[in-house]
Amino acid sequence: MHEQLVKLIAHNVPFSQKEQALCEQYFEPVLFPKKCILEEEGKIPKYVYFVVSGFVRLFHYNDKGDEVTTHINCPPGFITSYVNFINQVKSNENVACVTECELLRITRNNLDVLTQQSTAFKDFSILIFQQSLAYNENRSNELATLPAEQRYQKLIDNYPHIVHSVPLQYIASFLGMNPKSLSRIRKEMIR
Image (cartoon, rainbow, N blue to C red):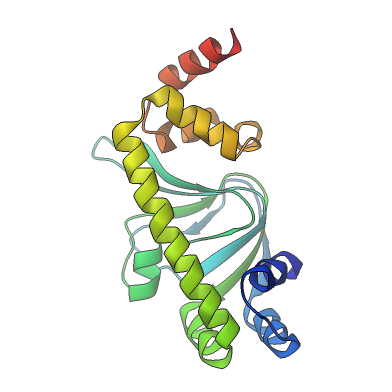
């Protein structure tokens, strides 16, 4: 299960066999069923996850008790409630499997050890953090400036498999709209 992670790291930074072995040592392979809660709000996140296969989402409950999906992760990629994981404080978000998932996970302590022992992984972690910041800034701008139709079109252009694997109510919430609006947009696009 480590092949995708190793390939992703090696594609971005020089990565030795020794560092690969360290990565395989510290990232634990796990399988989870559909709808499994990996990390629960009100608790300190234990792991950062690398998604090998399947879809994982971040969500919280709004003041009306409705689920609000803030992130959907398509493989390969990392997911957790990052700020809470890094600072080891209680999260207001849940991390949940949308589908059955193959994941690699690492604790905060092991992540610190790995970045101390591997220059490549430290450089890769910085790169992932920079990409995450850019992604979140871009997403905020899109939610604030793009009409719903364009947000949906960009999503299916960039992640075409998401509409076949993730329930529409999660996609709608992620795009900042209600499911009825998304259904209307999808019908109009088919015409």
